[in-house]
Amino acid sequence: MSADILPFKAASGSIAPEPPKLRMQRAFGVGRVSFKAPPSPNAPPALDELYQEGAAKIRLPKVYSDMAEAALINTSGGLTGGDIMNWRVDLHANTKAVISTQACEKIYRASEDTARVTNDLVVGENAELHWLPQETILFNEASLTRKLHVELAPSARFVGVEAIILGRQAMGEQVESAFFKDSWRVHRGGKLLHADELSLSGSVAELSRNAAVLNGARAFASLLFVAPEDQEVLNARARTLQCEQDRAVTALSAFNGKLVGRVAAADGFALRQALIPLLSGLREGYSLPKLWNL
Image (cartoon, rainbow, N blue to C red; front, top):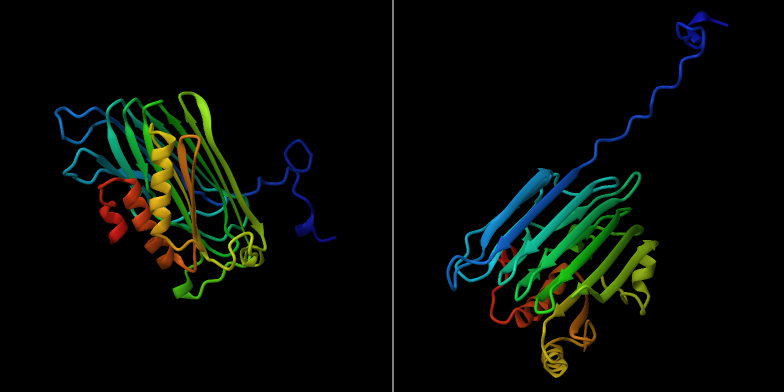
């Protein structure tokens, strides 16, 4: 046996251990923002805390209303297996804010592990939070686990949306297989008000063709509206918004002090065209963040 292929021996005479397996560099980010009551009537809420770490960045566009605005940014340019992003938003009593994202979040092919995104939202008494991130785009063989935790005071108001696009149709992208798990937990006054578990795994292309899943749609969204209003008021609002939509792709239901909706569309453009009037109706006169129109 040639000497150059003998196992290397440590000084003690024992065979040296195998070097540790190298792991790919992964993105990590933590972003927190909180707002407190405005200094004067009709002014936007004042910034209370802003924290940024790693790939998580938060920008505060100038506003001219009583609602603050924050834009969440992932500077890594997208997520893949093993990446972690944690966001937190706190609204103190008597504040209003809308949270959006700079652009659509892209979830790329994962060679191992899954991307993890956690969103923690806390809304105080008489406060109002509009959670309006732009769409998340899943690429072929992407893997994403996302959690949304919302804590609402009894008098708080909340509008939330999360939208998914299965590949960009205009770019000819096809999502044959992927993993996506979305978990929502919403508490009001310390009690569970809304729980939602959505999961797609394996042959997503085949699953999405199923009439009971997406019926061929490539884009879909989940909506939630919570407000301290009478059930009849919520029912009337659901009926009004539903009449303005194509019933084949939009379903709205009001019960237990909340309004829940699902929207499915052929592509991302059609999905946004359906979401804009829905969100505008739920936001009662507030225009969508400018980032949605760029």
